[in-house]
Image (cartoon, rainbow, N blue to C red):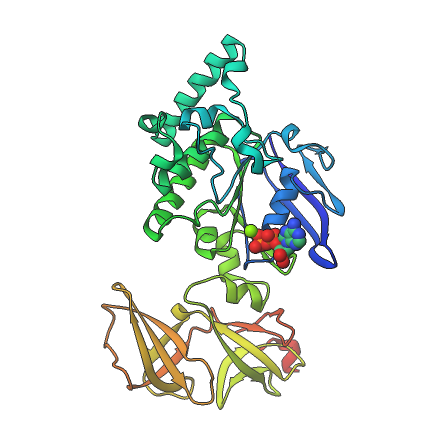
Amino acid sequence: MSNIRLNTITKKFGTTDVLKGVDLDIDDKEFVTLVGPSGCGKSTLLRILAGLEQPDEGQVIIDGKNVTSMRPADRNLSMVFQSYALYPHLTIRQNMMTPLKLRDLSTSQRLPLIGPFLARKEYKELFSQVDRTAKILKITELLDRKPGQLSGGQRQRAALGRAMVRNPLAFLMDEPLSNLDAALRVHMRAELTQLHQRLGATFVYVTHDQAEALTMSDRMAVMMHGKILQYGSPEDIYQNPANVEVAKFIGSPAINILSASVNDYAQICIQNLILDLFAPTQEPNITIGARPEHLTFCDDNPTALTGFVQHIENLGADLYYHVKIKDEQRPLIVRSAAGNGKRHQIDDLVHVKFDLNSTLAFAADGTRLQTHRKLMDELAS
Ligand SMILES: Nc1ncnc2c1ncn2[C@@H]1O[C@H](COP(=O)(O)OP(=O)(O)O)[C@@H](O)[C@H]1O
Ligand SMILES: [Mg+2]
């Protein structure tokens, strides 16, 4: 069992509020991702969980026990860093047998080997544990090499292996894939997901890459400026973003955002277009969000926006059309399957319609507005 609870964690560096009261619940065996733009406080939160940093307020609870003032080494958590932090003068086997000194990475060069100082029985046990771990990670033939003789992906696996040998309560990972090239990153996403299933351990994973969060997590916490804006399954966050910041951050290409208004009948209007969609709000000005896959081309009709094709991104299976709409600063991005209907060319006049079941609406302050396909009775009266 290893469930983790972070209770209203706050942290200041100087006068900057880096974490502004963060609550997070992580279930046993869950894969939870902290995702958000650079500088939003993800690493700080993970370091507080690991014990490398003290919060100003709040508690870290692991399995019901308050560990806030406990040393990192006593928390039995394993951390995997973006830099891998492998000792360059040790072989991979020696690295895996030597615990990472979490408190002081800078003096790693002078760290003594732990192996020779262990009792013979413990040493043998650790040795075979390394063998078992290396097998799982398919790095057995690399055990006698030094980190400098490994590729990025192999070093990544060795760093993971060192964390696994400890058999920790949970694995903490801070952007572990960001030093890898794009193809290897995608490959490692699948490997990490499978590893998580095989180990049946709790993973807390930090990334700025929304695609990593969507593809790997059981639940993801979207962080911005020191707060968690939304915590939920990838499906929920993608389909039901709680506010416009989450909607814009998650999804690639990004969701299309348009300014809109609400008329006296609570109908949503974009420019002259009246959508058959209602937002019960007193605010006249709102924004709407439509993902590229929720826009389609259609014939000219009163519920479609008209524009010109400005640019086409061909991704093989899909085409992303950038459509310039009059008076809109940014083009709308419309996804179209490559084999689907007529191909448009640059400068073509096109008409775009909204999938009203998936179109999202946000109030001026960014919070989500519930929309309805039919006007509710109480509003009609
Ligand atoms: N030790 C520190 N001293 C001062 N400021 C820091 C320190 N660590 C992080 N920060 C600041 O705190 C903010 C959050 O940092 P961090 O948690 O590393 O963000 P992220 O991992 O989301 O990119 C940043 O503005 C960063 O500059
Ligand atoms: Mg970071």
